[in-house]
Image (cartoon, rainbow, N blue to C red; front, side, top):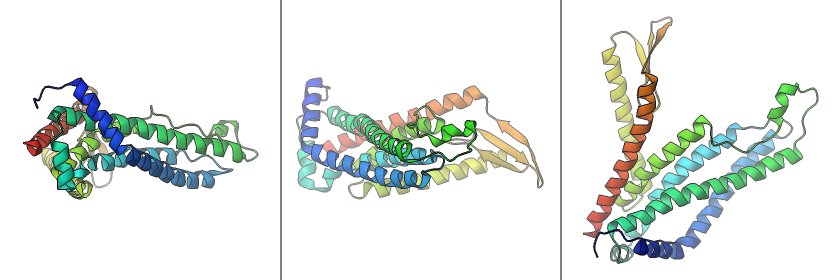
Length: 274
């Protein structure tokens, strides 16, 4: 079998994958919807006759999207735990890239669309329930009335956008971990991420403190984008990276990580198939 990508073979392989795994995916979808409904229902019931708790929308979305995607991606190659199933997968008449492309579609595109569908089914049910059952207390100022009406979660918020970026990056890491570790891949790759992430943060913090001799506190999300200068009694101000630097790094850093781990997955799969 040559390594030239064939869309025909890819289509057949994708069809074969869903024919074999659709029951498992339906079961996982039902379980995910059930878990979201339970947590969201408890919060919605607690919000009845009070302001709707929009924070729970965000919490369920972020946790479900990021951790759900990571766990799902870490189970991609679970069949390698069984030698016979692993050999059968490796001997399929398709190239490495075609096999990887199937898993890319499943872990990135199908999960992305499937989670959004399940989340909004859950969100619509809970918002409809709240708007139907809950009553607005009397003497509420007009400017507070919108808080007593439940609306569907918006995907254009800063946290929603950040969650999407983290989903793609972390799921690519988990997918690589599924190839790198045969058993309990999610736990092993999570430990690696925690240890390496903590080391990077500590080195980053130490490096920034060494650059500025006076008391300072580095800050940032994925990297140091600000440093707070302070004395014992008060803050003296902030040192910030230029906005164009921050915006560029926020795009380049996740992109590099994403491409790196998918490239690593390709070579890891090729290594198994040699």
